[in-house]
Length: 75
Image: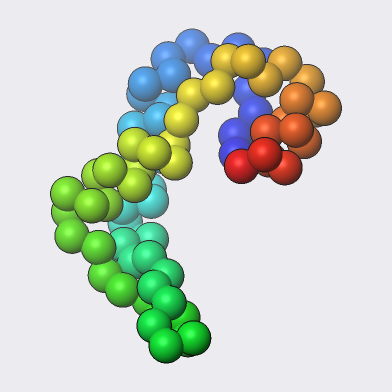
């Protein structure tokens, strides 16, 4: 999570965070449960793009620390 007072260019910041995430090989994997055990499984480019769009979101409804706590508890 990134908390900023005012964001001059949200899309530029979002893209920078996504670019940094793509450079980390461990972020190209998801956990998969198989026979009671968890394993890392590599994601393809399309699946990685979907995951990045799903998890790197903008939420303007969060106004204070209490809203952050509620959001994190819900997610």
